Length: 295
Figure 1: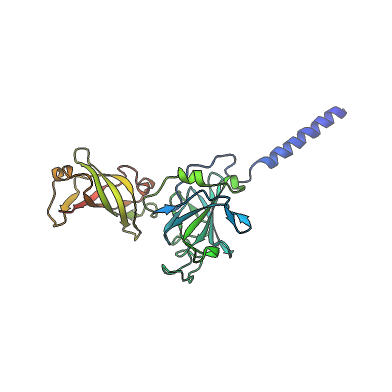
Figure 2 (figure 1 turned 180 degrees about the vertical axis):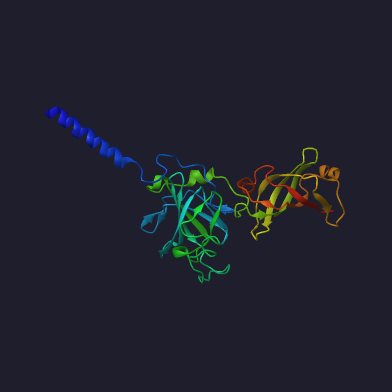
């Protein structure tokens, strides 16, 4: 009888341990998914996780980028604003569907491109325009703007990006950032958007209706402008594409096919609903509306 009671107590103890061993985050034991890279546009970053920061080690990777560069959700999830930290400044939590929690720190608090500190931690300044605290967001959706708020004030615009698997302690995001899917642009999902792309021609092939280019800058009909890009992009070359040189003379498909690689080129895409594939610049996800080649 005593042995049976001991076995029952042991079983109960194991059950209690198992109960408290279950991660509290909603994702359970799911691994960190492949992420959308959190900043759109040119960036630099290193594996500075654990580097000295005053009395505490750095719990993130700092992603250096131009002030007010778009900051996006790395996976589907729910966001929460945090505005009460003098050191973090304007901050946002993303509770990912996988169970991973992400911290976005030092978001923008400037009204102008100067370090004026006249803005507040509100939508349209620190957070994406129209975004509400507690909103559910999709991977690649813009949620904020790069800045230098908090104790980064006046130092350099960047995103302090933390990654907490299953909502636990922070780990280095570096390997997840290195394999992250980089967006070409950010826009409200489903919104009608057209792009103006500038760069160098790689190849035009009217028979397969494709055009490849090395992108150096872009602007969107929604107002986003990005420079200093270096990315190969393959677009669908629509039969209705208007091709001209700088003088306005029409170019035939044969003219485009015969152009040498490296020729300067400007492409405007057809206005179409923004999709994740289009934002990623996936092959043939964008369709040309016009192509201009210098004479």
